[in-house]
Image 1 (cartoon, helix red, strand yellow):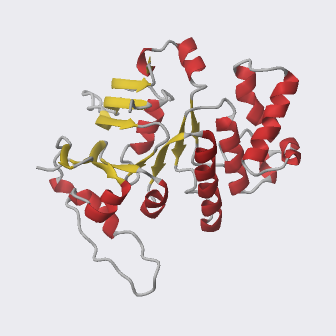
Image 2 (image 1 turned 90 degrees about the vertical axis):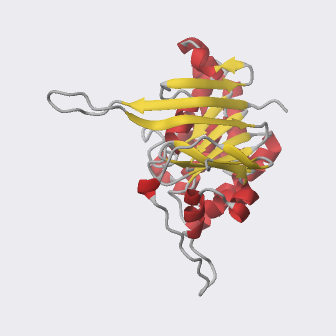
Length: 293
């Protein structure tokens, strides 16, 4: 099967502040990252804060410009697109942001916020756009009365549903979910996750799911890539990651997962951060890659 998305040797560097008489070396937030996402797949990208997973997702959409590497979406070379072509291509890939409280304009009614992508891309008449917005609100489990309200009138979970409706307005193939439930209460998280899974089935969506909650990743992802210091250290089907993790960092992450049953404890596995060596991924079993000797 031809991948929907291919990322090869992706690099993103940010300038670092130097002293009076010298330039500091650039900070490499994403370092030689390569992966592919199949149509209809949920591909998880996990790691601790600062590992580079959000930067990778934003580089994929060119919300920030990569320093080097190749990004292909279907038959498009994303890095080669002009500003106009990129704007048109963004109909096909969208993002749901982490914070539902800052991702919506507080001065704009939420119906207008969901309609905005349709206006920007000059899709349909005013009446057709209105009908599409009503359809989107119903799709994410909200009634048409909500369209006339402002963001402050909704809970965090409702705002995230509105953000998802906006992301789906242009009927994208790929949705980057950047920690979409981490700012929500646990009970609301389950509702939003179930909605994401339902929409994937109904609309044939492909997800890049960025998260640090490993239990959630196991529940919804088909394959998982683990990032550390800007590099991929392990890529495998979700069950293989949880049942037979190979890289020491992945093993340490898994050992830190809180257990739900009282009295159940996993033995914590320490990880030697100072001894980390950046190694290329190699196949340790079918479809299971790890950066180990």
